[in-house]
Amino acid sequence: MNLVFLGPPGAGKGTQAKRLSEEFKWPHVSTGEILREAVSKGTDLGRKAKEYMEKGELVPDEVVIGIIKDRLKLEDAQDGFILDGFPRTVNQAQSLDKVLKEEGNSLDLVLYFEVDEEEIVKRLTGRRNCSKCGAIFHLIYNPPKKSGICDLCRGELIQREDDREETVKNRLRVYLSQTFPLIDYYQEKGLLREIDARKSEDEVYQKIKRVLELA
Ligand code: AP5
Image (tube, rainbow, N blue to C red; front, side):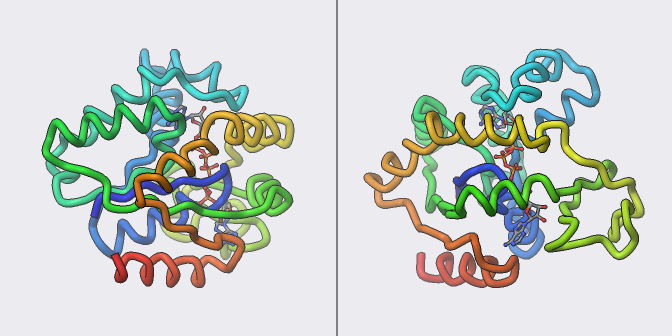
């Protein structure tokens, strides 16, 4: 299936996308992860993206649309994919439609993760990511067995630069002004399915699977 995971920062999109990708073997395509990797390697793309990401602003559309165009051409994305964090503007959504149409392809579903602001702030400020394999933990909701160490690969757990409280507030503002309109965009196309993302990780995962079975 060709899926988009849409929702505010910290709603649990990455957590669920990783799990679904493992079970169904659809690639998990996260523009945030691609950009963070470019920043840490200091590539041209990383240098362009860094200042926007640090402030919690969106990286310009033409940059992320270019990333997605190239990524969706790869062999592993021909039998389905999970887009996490893309599209984030109506312009990005229209470009995605165009790119897929040119390949005779289209989206199957857009899952909208709903969570309130108080919970988002709790989830983002407590999040820790593995610096080696990218696994996602939370200090309270999903703590690692050994503090600061990844359960899966023993890598060091770090806090994302943009998970500081001031940046989180700006990311939320940006989400509401630029990404929220996509809910109407996909609702009108009949593709949107709402997921109550306030529930536990397992409950959210089971709900996603039920929605996919009905599609
Ligand atoms: P990106 O990396 O996409 O960040 P985001 O959309 O803000 O989403 P997050 O990764 O913060 O949250 P998530 O929903 O994946 O939550 P997670 O599963 O980790 O983007 C970062 C930046 O890159 C942007 O600000 C922008 O600058 C740039 N960018 C990226 N894409 C772009 C685009 N298309 N256009 C322009 N710029 C772009 O979970 C969060 C925490 O909660 C974790 O600790 C987890 O363990 C915990 N958790 C998860 N589920 C649950 C649950 N059910 N119950 C309790 N805790 C839970």
